[in-house]
Image 1: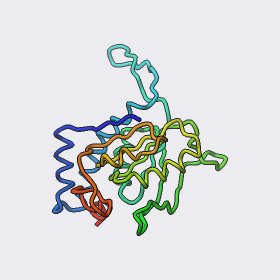
Image 2: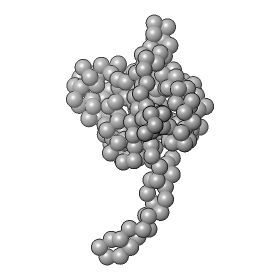
Image 3: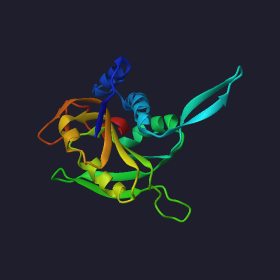
Image 4: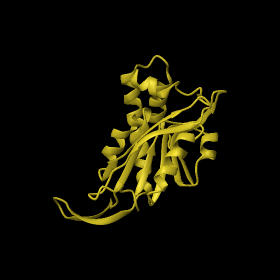
Length: 208
């Protein structure tokens, strides 16, 4: 599995602001969206491309372009905050959703899924790249449960993208993932398996 930590001073700035407990929900969403643009660019490196001949005002140029449809699957709630950035950078994408929560034993529970379907009404993930979006990769329980469901539809590959990831979460990632892309992997876990020092509950921070 490929592990990619995307970092630069711009990401550092928005990540620091997202961490700050004084940052309001509107600003938290701006921070996550801006970081997600960088992560989406990195994720695009794992996609198939083809050569396209482009006619410019002064001549012609052969350009590589993405040539596959991508399925974006944010994990609700917080993962939705990353979605618009990925939609902007990956124009040939469709979106599915996973509703999930952790029970009292800190185990991931998938409540509901909704995936894109073909015209015949059958879920249409076969042979496609699926990108799972979740702001926090703590223990990997939720994204692993998501991958288990997605894998039943035979995608070409599954990529996990998070804002913050712990080393424990990365090491726990299912082998069904071909890559993990994150902005940071320096946080740890507290006794309740929440990312520490992290950002707090990212869903609450993003949606008040």
